[in-house]
Length: 376
Picture 1 (cartoon, rainbow, N blue to C red):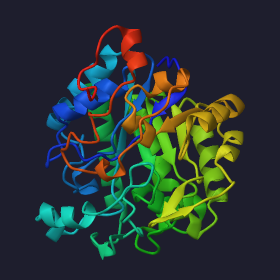
Picture 2 (picture 1 turned 45 degrees about the vertical axis):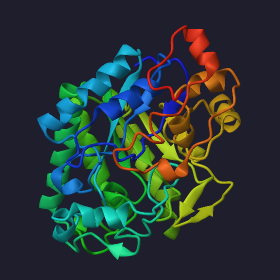
Picture 3 (picture 1 turned 135 degrees about the vertical axis):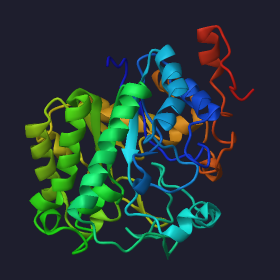
């Protein structure tokens, strides 16, 4: 993978897949637009890795061959633009209760309605490991070693399908924002999991490292990225610095050829609808991980340039990439950015706020051709 710049498309939940998780032509158009600058890295929508991992309608999946094949037009479009795709794989914090699996509309009412999103694509209504909009939608269930092995199998299967069938260039494993891997790392399951996976930080990190081991054995270290959020609302409940330093040391030792580490900064993190502003950052982790490092969270072009110049990092943009299909061109040419429409971030299957943002006239002139659906 040979990138030509340091701007990365951040993984985001946009809900433009079908009700049963198949990628759509709408999504292909979105990624065609955003990968228009050659040598760009697109990290995909958060994609469910297994049946027990998900449950939300309109969220993409990649755990059957049919779901993986639906991704092929997206990867083909990105590759035609001489850019790259890493598919982000995730499980929810737990298994969704049967009543919500059996009635997706009921789940939509809770999870999607009047629910603004944070800068990185997570609904602000997610208030704890177990609740969305104050409602507990997950089963209260002891997570056994058998369950853990099933999750690991799901990650491996999804990674294999993503790279071998969907033809993605790699996958990003999602240990952030309080979802399942993060929940283990932060000790959020308490005594509701096997004793080997709780308590001391070595135990809490065991699941994440086992997932990394299994997935890298399947598709290779160079095709795997890893995302963390040391300062999420859940992480702030305890001091996670020691835990994440341990994790980086283990990853550096066991997986030195990993594609990258992707860390979410605290500068504009949120708790519910409140922002948490802080001068701290995740750059201390670069002392323990010497490979490619992506930083994300609340960046504007000026602060992104500063991070890239001073820290040698790549910088992931979410909201600004949503609103600016030619973001890389605009940043490199110091052009003004389109404002984003927050109310349209999270609207299932809608074109609005998705493929209707305009390219800059300067970009269109420079490329001597108009892009499809540029909003004109």
